Length: 365
Image 1 (cartoon, rainbow, N blue to C red):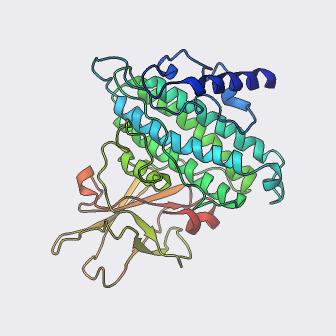
Image 2: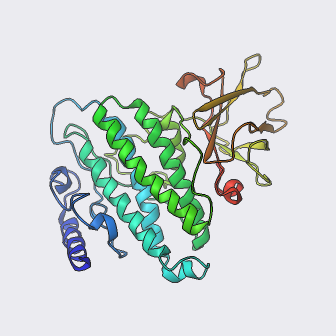
Image 3: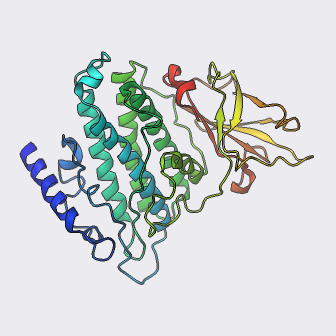
């Protein structure tokens, strides 16, 4: 079986060298290449060469002049995000080896699992490409900088991987709420289950943690705001000119981080917020009301926020103590309780990772 998988990888690599930039791209044919669910290439291929379709990196031009399908923009956004997720795991496969993880005391299957997750993510690329109608472009990858947050440290890679898997579940549940077609909702739900399995593996085998995240994962209604957070990995100016904007649309909201000396992001903790982009700072209007709005599971809690002393004094927020320390807590600053509309949100979300607790102050953003 591994011989067949390797042969498929070599064949698709050969095709990649001759694929035109956009017009005539073989990926425009949904039947081209190994099919996710029908090929073990997207299950258990082990190797550093990018598996299909990630070895064909040009955007796929529209091949029809008809109207785009109702969910084309959703799938374009998700494909662009998936290029980031896939590329992160491909970086891990290329940067590390089995000894990188066994030297940390982890099981000797750890590197194999990272290969398998990479393969699953490559399968997601092809699934998402095929969900975009022929009337819309299929985005290609940008260049990504994972060396800055990860470097050559295997443990840091695993920490970021844990955060990425939790975030993936978050934006997938958000996209389900914006989808127009039932088939899209079903596909998104199916993919989210795979991300859950990846996360369960990291909690059990890597961190030796309880894998259960409470009775419900967190639901956040504005998925493009979560997708916007992934832009931190994109090298500015590196995306193909044919790609649509990502995310589309974007509110270009100010990003928020937490202070470097933060000790805990558990429920009941007080956290100092840092606004990390000096060229894109929030504008708090005098006399206006602001709220910190927290999302956890299916719960939404709003607390009044005093912004009058900022920026002379930092803004501190307290994570609601009534939440359980499971899964993920999301916070935005909004002009209305509950952040009931997209326009009411005035900052990008802050994600407070709860499991494992030791990673909460390391990867929460």
